[in-house]
Image 1 (cartoon, helix red, strand yellow):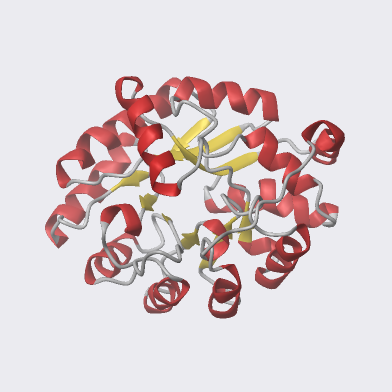
Image 2 (image 1 turned 135 degrees about the vertical axis):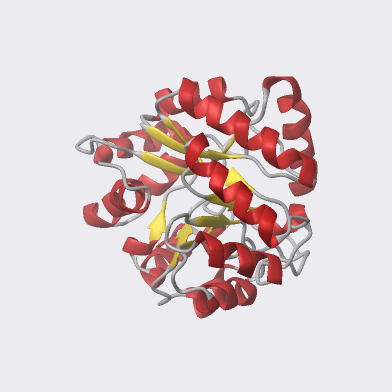
Length: 287
């Protein structure tokens, strides 16, 4: 499968960022950060997985600098455990960076090798660490999005901890839209945020099965470069702007570029404000 790529003239369209000037907060719901000593290796690994040249170095400091350029006031940050032994150190790292940078809010990680008891113990640590939710990447973690592990995790998370989950990839069957829909339907008390408009490279399939689910939201990350502006508007209105969240997928993309892409779309002011501010404020319980 070959994806289209849609260029945008950043200089010509940067004036559209003025549409956000009246907002107190601009929130990026999807950003990855890594410890400084492994950040370069992690970025290279992600770039190889998606066959893309990434635009950031993956450190918290570089994200904060990128946010300053874009006008982003808060980023939701996370990192994925690919083996069980990484869960505790990653969560401590995320908690520390959240404490160091007031503009960062962290979601923690878990791993499919954890038992129900271990899931409970990890979630209990979230309150002490100040972690606000859960990030899963079924493709990296080699687990189906509606597996027994994820269903158990969602049952324990309940309404306390939203789950942001990577969704979609035509190359794999771990996180397709049907699996995300099954998860959301079986765990209606848990808020599910399906990344990449609910199905990276499977956008129309995602819209068909995920729109209208009360407990499901989607983010815009890693999609606007591969889908025509007209189709992006159709996706936003198909899901409803109150169920769409802005995400850059840093360091895959820069928030400055992604915000210019979003604000250049023919959306209403209310739709834009829902996507970049109000929905995330509500989900993350920000004042």
